[in-house]
Length: 109
Length: 113
Image (tube, rainbow over all chains, first blue to last red; front, side, top):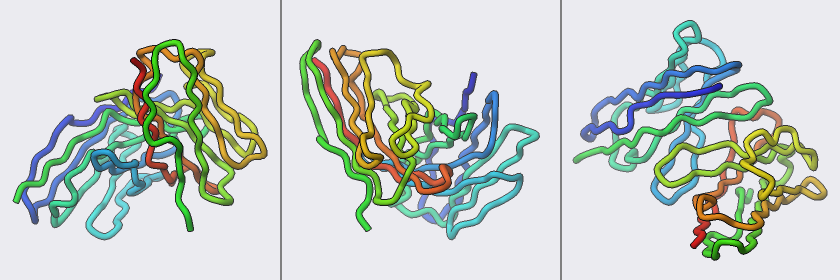
């Protein structure tokens, strides 16, 4: 089976840095993706890690350690518009994705 | 370039009725996925098309759900007969060559009464 764990909620203030962790257990693993979803909206792709290490895209970075079955999404210089749910997703066999339960990020002024 | 579109945006039906959801992927995207998010829970994979072929339908909950993608363009997901537990938001996503970056549609919110 496949399962992913994320914190259910995270709160931070504008301008701060926040890290959202994701641990996974899968029967097959090809990579870890991160998606952002605002209330009522569609999930939006943020990043993908196929190899160990850090991927940086603007204010967002994502990290993967395959040996630890662990990854995280790092959001820097937080803005109010970053308030949303963040999902990690593992690419398993058959190229489909298993999504984590999501982390709701609240950014306070 | 138009994004992924889904129709309808909302659907309210009674238990036992039939509903058909439609998804139009981004033009040229061979890969099309259906997902479902039940309130407060994670996004669950339903199935994956490559062009008109079902690549993986391991996530389909039961035989009340039927997905088609005739001609390898748009796709439909039919629920017949609908049950209360089918309520949720149904998302469609598409991708070109790599499944790593999927483009999601706005979703169809299905409510079964």
